[in-house]
Image (cartoon, rainbow, N blue to C red):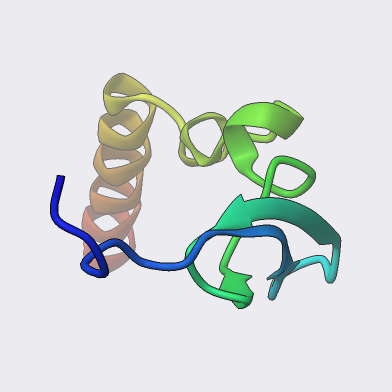
Length: 76
């Protein structure tokens, strides 16, 4: 291996979550890191997936069809 080309490894790099503010000490090549989401606030880990909030394709289609029907009845 070549010498002096590898980055320095910090064993206790401070990683901060910008969403919930949690702080972790993890190994990294950077001394201080900021992440958008962590395991405490990520939707997959918390079980609050956005997919459930939007509804399925059929539900969205029925909602649009009902809105269109209501517009037609109102116009007549």
